[in-house]
Image 1 (cartoon, rainbow, N blue to C red):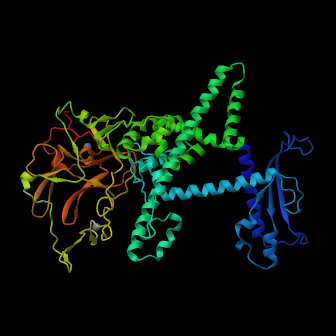
Image 2: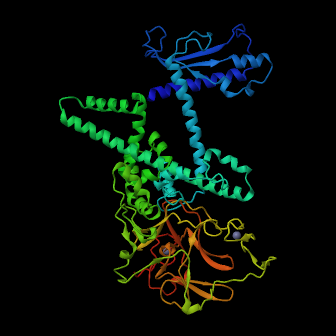
Image 3: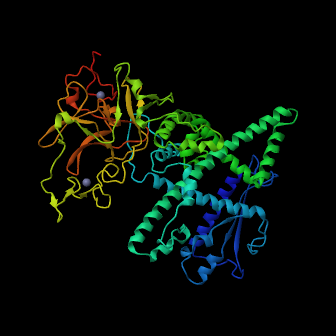
Length: 600
Ligand SMILES: [Zn+2]
Ligand SMILES: [Zn+2]
C-alpha cells in the first residue's frame, strides 16, 4: 500500500512541477507543432550507480518510482490563440499518473490499461476526501479560541472529534427512538377536508391552498422533515451497531471452524468464512475486505467504549475507523474510561437508545435512571455512583431535588419575587403590554422565540427549549468531593447554565449565593434543591464566573464561560467574602492560590 502511495505522490509531484514549468515558460519554439494531441510522458527510475559513480559499471535493475503523462494540448491550444495559459481549468491540464506502456505522442486514450484507470481513480478519490476533511474541521470549531490550561486538554485530533461528537449527540435534540422509523410512513399532510391525506411526494401542491392551510402544511412538513431526519439517524446507528456485531459473529465462526478442524490452516478457515460472506452479501472480495476493515474499527470502538459510543457517534466514526490515525492503546484506554459516562448521559437523556440494541440481541434495560446530574461519574472509568451516596457520610439525610427553574421561598417572600427589577425605560405598547428591553444588548426580550431579539444567552433565554448543558458531575481526585466537568467546549462569553435553587434570605454559615437588586437583597440556596451549578468548585484561576442577567424584568444568576475546553473541570472564583474567616484551605492547586492555609 505504502509503495503505491509513494509512487502516485511522486508521479503527481513531478507532473505538477513540469506542467507548471511548461505553462510558465514563454518559449515553446522547438516543440513539434504537428502533433494532433501532444502529451509529455515522464518516467523516473531509481537505480544503483555503483560505488565510484562510474557510468560504465553495470547498473542494478532500475526500479520505476514514478510515471506520469502530462496533457500538453490545452497549453498548446492556449499558446496558439494567444490566451493566458493559467486561465485554463485545472481539470484540463491536470497530470495523470500512468502505468501503461503507450508511446509518447500517441493519443492518450489508446493504451489505457487497467492499472492506469485504477490509479487515476484512487488519486481523484483521495483529493476529495482531503477536501471534505478540511471543511469538516472549520464547521466543527468555527469560533473556538485556544485556551491555555494547566489541566489535561484534549489534543485537536480525530479521537477528540469523535468524543466531542458523541457528547454533542447525547445532548442534542434528536431522539434515537426506533419507533420513529415506522412512524414516518404514517405521517400524513392533509390539504383539505375533501382530500384528507397527502404524502411527501405531492407536498409541493400545498402551495395552492389558503394561508391557514399553508401554515398548517408548513408546520406538518417541518414535523415530517424532523422525523425523517431522526429516522435516518436511527438507521445509521443501527447500521454501525449491526456491522460491529457482524465482525463479532464472523470471528466466532472462524474460531468455531478452527476448533472443529484444527488440522486445516487458520488462513483457510478464515478464507472459507470470508467467501461464504461474499456470496451472502453479493459483494466482491475486495468490496467486503474494504468494508470489514472499517467494521473492525467499529468493533474496536465498541469493545472500548461500549455500544453507546457506536449509537451516538454519528458520521464521524466512519472517518475515525477508515483512517485509523489514532487507534492506539492510549486512545482505546481513553474510550474505555468514557464508557460508563456515555451510558449515564444516554440512559438519562435518551432513554430509548437501548431499544436499538435489541436488533442484535443485547439487553435494552436501562442501567442509570433519573436525572443526568443524579449521578457522579469518574474520570478513571470507575462505576458511576448516585449523588446521594457521595454525601451520606457527612449528611446521612442528604437529599437533592433537580430543578429547572428557581422556586421562591413563600415563607420569606409571601408571593413576591425579590428578583423583580422593573425597568425605568419600559416601552409600553398600544395594547398596554410592556416590551422588555435587554439591558445588555438593547434588544427586545420575549419568551416567544418569534418576538425575541435578545441573543445574549441564546441557549438559556428566549430559546425554543432549554437543553441540558453538556456537563457531568464527577468525583475529583483533589479531595474536593464532587466537581463539574465540561464535556464539550464552551466559548468565551457563552452561558453554561443558570444558578437555580430556593430564592430565600437570612441563610447563614452554609454555602449560599448572595445576590441583590437595587432595592432588595436575596439569596439562592441550593442545599436541598437546585441544579448542577451547586457542584462547581472554587479555583483561584477560574475558567467561569457567575454574572447577573435580567430577563423579562427578573434578575437571574448565570454561569458564564471564560473560555473552556472540552474535558476540563469548570470552576468559579467564590470570592473573598466566601473565604473570609472560613477555617478551610483552598484546594485549587494553582500557583496563584490566595486561600491556601498553611496550618492544615
Ligand atoms: Zn440581550
Ligand atoms: Zn486557590
